[in-house]
Image: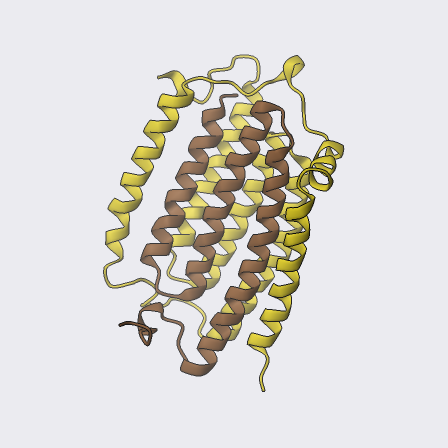
Length: 177
Length: 99
């Protein structure tokens, strides 16, 4: 049951402390996203969560995904969200009816799901450690590109068609006739 | 570091996102909660990618980021269309398809 203790490694204390701080920031930001009464504040808290996720990707030695996360999510998706907020309501500031009438029903659902997932994870992985130091084999960008363009080339093509269809679909849906 | 650090963080973010999808009425807020869920999945994929020293997790994470971008684009276009037609994006008022 030592799995939940954060600072079990005595050698890599710095990484654990960094992980803990970023994780705390992400969880507080995520809670603000789902509880805030102000749509713009929720969007800005989402920026915090997405940037924290990019930092966690760096801790996991996935630098290319981290950079992509910053470019796509923090850059493009957040601008889309802010445009969506701006175009769908002019009202800024507090808003009364952002939640459903019976939104408290979501609390037990989320808590039960969290309990089950946490139990399974702690039971399944106990204190499996990520490879570190000498045994670590960080995944190079070259390996990622080899993986994209050799075994996963067909999904890559499909993905480009998905993006094309999304761009055309968004234009067709949102234009005024 | 323990792999459970990252997996538990992913689980917490996932459940917060699920609560947001259930509780929120505003369609833009529901889309934001879906982003939370997709990010927690990405954290899990990258943790396993590093645990096994395999590049597949990184590849899937990149694909998920691309799909999420497409999803937000189409989703917000639909929300704009609904707002233009009905002057409201409250999800519980969209009941035409109820049988």
